[in-house]
Image (cartoon, rainbow, N blue to C red; front, side):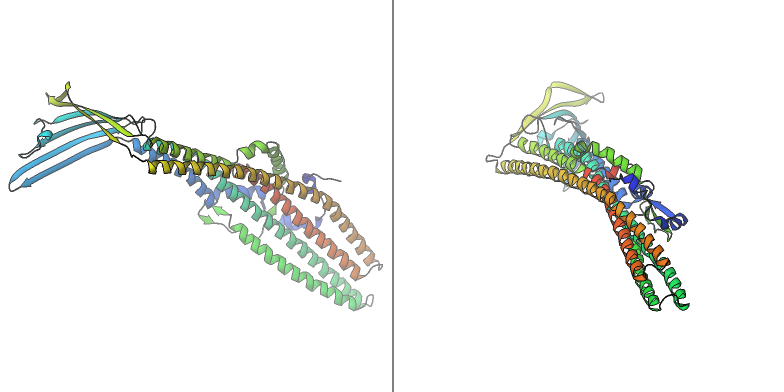
Length: 468
């Protein structure tokens, strides 16, 4: 008979735990995960990754900022002013590689180079510089800005990756803590029952209803249970300490769980329903996995770099034209006959550096594309494996629920027979030991099942954005 996991969570197999649970403070899985998502330092670190991407875009836009220019050069020697040259203005880079500039210069001096002569009121210049070879379609400034914009997009994927990993590790810590608590309660309750039975056996032996050897066996069971409780309590304390690593207040103040804090799983059916909805669209979620998105954007950045490297195979030719004017009535007046112009040309003959850089870029792109194909297949396999593991554990829980129930009935029957004298203390202990082991196996399976649900969401890359 197959049970849904919602029904499995409600099976009344371990009924004797309810009183202590009600008397203590519960920490639900949903509350814990939301606390981690909101306040953990790594969550704040993930948010900084986005800000870093925005800062890179701002930095790259600075390549297009207008620049103020000012230069003064003076030479005096033996009481003579050889020359004084002064220039001030600003340049404006544009998106298309064209640079605009306007400047004013005023030069004087006895030994001033004639080509630097200016009117006494100064010489005005308004000009333009245009690349007609390398840099016409793309240049270093445009390359860096495009890369920064793509990098800013990739930081969103990186933030998702960080949060996905954080929530997965935190969730696993919660279920390890849950398992340790349940195991501790099993042993504590078993110790209570064993101590009660030891008292009853001792009283029966004192009035001659049972042999005193039964008190020896009952006492040994008490000691064994105390040892098991001590080990389970140590494990629970260690898992609680591990859980505290994920509990913070606003990313700066670590929190310690109170001594009476215990796990609470009342909200799990709703979470399982949400997971089932995710599995319906698992193929599209794998395609949009943040790991794949980040790798794909990294290839886009390489493609932008490759385009700039290919552009550098062209000759570097830049044409400059500047209109000249001297002020009339304190305002510059430009004449088409007053100008200077020129052009610069540079071109490596062998192009070994440029061709080598382009070849390296092609190899890196091809290598990254192959890595992306592998990563895509690995994530799909990881998702399939996680789903298979979860389905298998769900089936095992459904099967084991019958075993756990039957063991409980068998133990109750053996205890009744012991009370009426038709069974031995040895048989009761054996039945009880089997029942305890069944409980332990159940809680191990249950913790593994819920951890496997987390693993499915981690494989889909949605844990960072999942609404718990």
